[in-house]
Length: 250
Image (cartoon, rainbow, N blue to C red):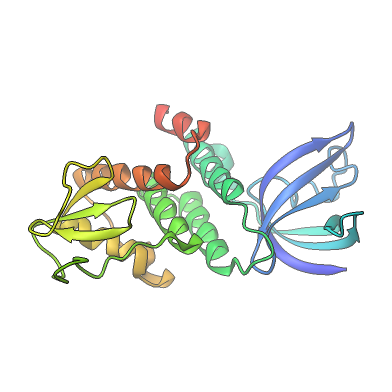
């Protein structure tokens, strides 16, 4: 039997009365837990609904292939992020976050940093203390960084200059080039960053979590950042997320 904390990022019905939940936890990454009578039982309903951060106690069984399957023994909610559920736009954004997590599907790995990022994003979304579009961009870019796609942002890959009026970022290589050294500025993978945008991108990629959400942007730079992080995410996650389209329609 194992006991751990985790965030429910997906629910799926299994038969007439049971369901499975997909949970992001620090110790094991993304796992599936089978919940017997989960569609009818009120005992653990709040703790096992999507967006709930809960304490799970599970039994383990191995199948014929040797894979471990988790079965819920008990669950107790820590935070259900109630206010997210009351607003359509918040629900759509939170659903987009969980779609990204399910798509990445990190298993049997330390996901403490990803869980921290997600819980912080949910907290600020729930409390309405940060602009949703800013939370979207922070989550998109930092998630990819934590998944191993953090780009090289220290300076120009050729002359090592720290910054210039325009720096070219290449989505394919993950490298920066200054205006003088840029070899293919017309590439479909090229993205121009001015000094302010480069600072913002570096900040999101490299700063500690206790400071990650402590900034605000003008509408103009928020729009630029959203465009950059969506294209960065789209390059690595070649998937058309319906939750993102719905969020942008609201």
